[in-house]
Structures are given as C-alpha cells and as structure tokens.
Image (cartoon, rainbow over all chains, first blue to last red):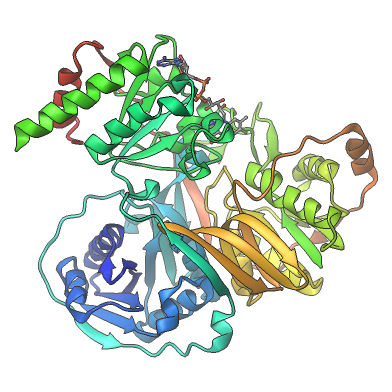
Length: 324
Length: 247
Ligand SMILES: Cc1cc2nc3c(=O)[nH]c(=O)nc-3n(C[C@H](O)[C@H](O)[C@H](O)COP(=O)(O)OP(=O)(O)OC[C@H]3O[C@@H](n4cnc5c(N)ncnc54)[C@H](O)[C@@H]3O)c2cc1C
C-alpha cells in the first residue's frame, strides 16, 4: 500500500496535493498496489471524492479540530498511524513547508530512508532509486532507499496535474493524539490571502537591482497582475528592503520552479540561478548584453526594463483580449 | 539554557559542481568549503545573540563528518560558541546524520537545538525535523524570528501560504532562515580564540544508513537564448503561448 499525505486550504485540496496523489498513483500502478490518502482537519466528504478522481482508492480522515493548525508532531503521528494501519511500503508527501517538517519526522519514526524533494518516479529496476535536486538546482542526484519502508517528499510542480476518474471510500481514523502532541501554542496566523504564494506560483515576475528602487516596482506589479503571476526578487533587493524577505529567491532564499520565470534587471549570479533554474521557461530582460542570465534564458530582451516591461504588459493584455 | 547549533560544511556557493568516477562521486578538487550559510548566518548568530543577551548559558556547535570538516567548524568557532563537537561519521543519509546528532544531544541535555532550514549541497532540509522526532521534541521549521523569555520560546515562522507566531516551552528544535539574525564577520580576536577552543571528536553512533546516493546528473544545457526585439513584445507573448506553452 502507498500512503499519501494531502493538504487542504479551508476544506479544498491543494493542487500540489492532487499532484502528489497522481504521483502516488503512478508508483502504485507500477508496484501493483493501491493508494490511501491521509487527510486531516475539516474537509467535507464531498471534497474527498476529488482524491478519488486523481487516483486514491481510500481516504483516511482524522477530523480532530486541533489539526486545523499545522503541527509537525501531531501531523507526523497521524501519517505514521495511517502508514501502520495500511502496512504502507511507500509514504508520500510534498516538499513544501508542511512536508519538510512532517516527512522527515515520519521517516525518523519508522527508521525509513527519505528522498527529500523528488523530481522523478522511483526506478524500481535499480532497487528504489529516485531523482532529486542537489546543489541548489545545479545538479541532480539519484538516491537509493534501502530500508523496507520508503518516504518521499515530492517537489511541487514537477508533474502535470490532470484529473482522471475514480472514487474513494472514506474512513474516519483515530490517530491516538494526546494534548502533549499539541503543546505548541499558536499566537497568530497570517495567511496571504488572494494572491498565489510564490512557492506554488506557475508564473513569476522577478526584479533585481536593475529596477533602481522600490518606486519602480509598479511596472512589475502591473505585468504580474496581467499575467496572474506572483512577484519575486533578487537578494540585494530584499536586503535593501525594497521588497519583503519572502520574495527573495536564490541559493539563500526560496527555491522555485514555476512554468515561467521573467527576470527583470537581474544579472543572473550563480547564487540567484540556483533558486530559479528549475523553471521550465526563463525570460530575461536586461540592458546589458553581457549579463550572465542570458546564458540561462530561453528568451531574452535587451533594453531598459522601464520601457520594455510596460510594453510586455500591453502585449499580454492584447493577447488575453484576443483569446476571449 | 544550553544551545546546540548544527553546522554542516558545504561547497562555496560559486564552486564548480562536477562529478567523477562515472558520475558517482562529487568532485571536491579545487572546491572551497564554507559553513552552510543558513547554519552560519541565522542559527549560529542567533545562538550567540541569545548568549550575549542572557538567556543562553552555553552555545555548542556540532557537525557530523570526517576530519576534513574541522577547518569549517573552526571557522564557526571564530564567530563564537564555547566548544565544538565533531561526530566522526561520513554519510549523506539524513537519517543517520540526524540519529548521530540526536544521540549526542540526548546524552548532553540541550534545551534548544538550532539548525539552518537546509544545507545548500544536498538540499534535504530534513535533519532538524528528524532530530526533533528522535528526541520527541517539538519542531518549528523556517523560523524568521526567535525570542526566549525564561523557558518559553516565541517563534515567528513560515507555514504553507503564510506566517505564524507560536509560543513553545523548551526543549525544542528550530530551523532558521532569513530574518532570524544578521550575518556577522569574524574578528581577529575571535579567530585567535577559536584556535584554542575545545573541539571534541566523538565516535559515530551505530546507525546504518537507509539511503545512499548512487549517481549524479547535470541538468540539460539550455539550447540557447532566443533574442526578441524590444519593439516586438507581441512576438514574445506569441512564443510564450505557442512555443513554450506557458501562458
Ligand atoms: C553566499 C552567497 C549567497 C547568495 N545568495 C543569493 C540568493 O539567494 N539570491 C540572490 O539573488 N543573490 C544571492 N547572492 C548575491 C548574488 O551573488 C548577486 O550579488 C545578486 O544576485 C545580484 O542581484 P541583482 O542581479 O539584482 O543585482 P546586480 O548584480 O547589480 O544586477 C543588476 C542587473 O540589472 C541590469 N540593469 C541595470 N539597469 C537596468 C535597466 N534599466 N533595465 C534592465 N536591466 C538593467 C544590469 O545590467 C545587471 O545585470 C548571494 C551571494 C553570496 C556570496
């Protein structure tokens, strides 16, 4: 059996979790087994069928209201309980802020090998070997898990998410949680509402020092809004407080792998590239033909950002109007 | 409050990444090693601040590695910290690294274990949470602010799609990222002092690795950039739609 941890936001499963279910389904098929999804907190039964449509045969649901706040200790306990109940050989979660805290705990509890940040399916012809990013995206490694139970956290946005057909049975699961599992007291939660979180965004517009100052960011924001993209920035930009820290991408900031990364006024230092070179398509706008970023780009535009970006925004607007 | 800071050594951020032995071994020739930036800039510096401002009584540094990790741990001692421990084991299996650290931490009663959010070489980001599980402690990941009052730690941290502020009693494991502290530069006095600070080598725990790296691969090279005239943004949009298929 394969157990997969799924995350939801206010009762609606996240797209990246559906990706994890599809990923699990692919492995289950190859191993000739089934999938059980593990859901926690307040999710309506109707939504559970979504998991069925992506390949889960069964959902174990632990409804304890205390699980509505994220808590790695309690979440790991629930996943371990599910894995033991189902006698799972493979346990899958996401390589996001939740999964990075939960999956290592699960692995440690079960003394199981972990592939953290998988970007490929396990190769069963070579034991259980899974491809992952290393050296901040500068290379890949193949990790062979040798323990009986295997734990994988999947890098979000690795595989396309296509809905299939199917239904899942839903079963309530008591995970034996106690007050000691909830000893972290949550004082305040602030969720970014409306906008897509950077780590999940499929389209990202990013700015560097070439934009000269925070007062010029409106051109990027207009483009991002037109595209429905998230915004990011280089490290010096966050260091200078032109943009919030959360937008800093690169080797010492966030690692992202959107479908489209538009880099504006960013030179393309190796530390910056490390965080973004997993992007499927890279567009670079820079006034210096020698900027190293052009070497890592799919499309390049040479010139002044303040002139080009508004033109691009207009072109996107026109394109969208033509589509409707 | 005794703090244990986990330190890992990683290739310099500008190091050329290359592999030898038929792509099975990371080629360290000509590579300079540095303290993992998240461990250094955030975890270590915040531990030092907590000692300078009162709550911490001792700051110990721990690394799991062979003797070649010692120059880097001396560099860390130059920034501060009372003593360092090198657990003599060679592994890139996160579980065995965590089991070694947890073993040591358990025997020496640390109240707070700090680590970086991930190391920039293997990018697993799993050791902190594993240590917490093995010690049956709470784990707060991706902290951007850590304050200690008595035995209560207040942590601001990233959660999926937002931020959260938590209060938690010691003992506790925290992984640190940007915001926790500002990077420091070691001064001459620190560098001199580091030479004589205790660096204890302890034998690795008897844990078997449960994973291993069997090979490496470089990402496919980009096929070359297609330059588009600044006056033809319609063309760029068209390509993004019909060629790259991203919009
Ligand atoms: C240990 C370490 C870790 C690091 N981690 C990171 C990290 O995580 N992320 C990160 O980003 N950096 C990181 N850095 C810093 C990195 O080395 C670079 O200094 C940084 O990425 C440069 O940012 P930038 O491209 O915005 O600025 P610059 O390098 O100053 O580049 C600005 C670019 O804008 C262009 N430009 C100027 N004016 C215009 C205009 N009008 N129109 C169009 N283009 C224009 C210029 O040609 C230039 O290419 C790290 C460095 C170290 C040593």
